[in-house]
Figure 1 (spheres, rainbow, N blue to C red):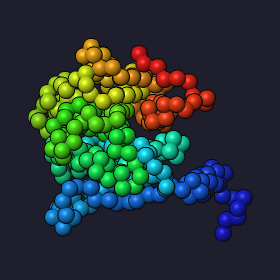
Figure 2: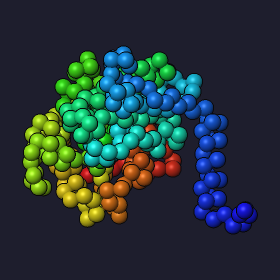
Figure 3: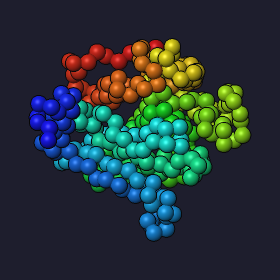
Figure 4: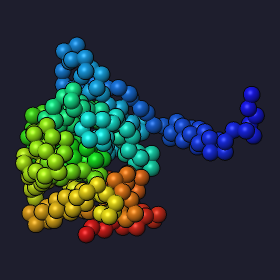
Length: 290
């Protein structure tokens, strides 16, 4: 039997902070509703895969009124990954809608996009029941999720299917998403190699000046996935050229594609300035666009 002294120090630190985090969340009154089926159909009408996969978690501050929500789409190349919590809710008191969507090859790339839109529609149709404000819904994601967020936010047809104008989104946030046609979509369409493809499945195809406020975040261009920063810089420039009034772009120096940790800080203060415009941020510098 191991004594306490023989337990690795790193494990003790991890357990200590896990307890602290769990206790703090309970004390702060956060509620987590798990495994909500979000497709607009009776559960028994869904396929076995949909019943398992099309689920979300909703994390919100108990008793809060008029709160903002972020719909968060995970990464994984449209063929992997699972729902995850964006590290913003506890610090900024913003609810999070943490989504699982259908994955290739079990579904088509069109279905990935449709699932993302359906999750956003769930948020618009349900957050008010929890005390949230449907006019304060932000769509965000990382990597493949960043691609889906940009597509659903820019190409209005995906949300229009659910009777929602994409311009109702309070903002669109993409962490290192592809802005050309996603590599998995290219492969499914029969394009080989690393040839650049721009078609209706590229966020760049749908640039428009009346889109919701947009935040673009990537890692360092010397360390990111090939061309990822440049694609996002092009989106930023074309949105500006189109006359978009509220687009911000950040390139986080010293980070590769795994840039979510500092990215959450950028997203948090960007959200803070919009959700709490009259509150002071003494602990954070003002955001800057390039």
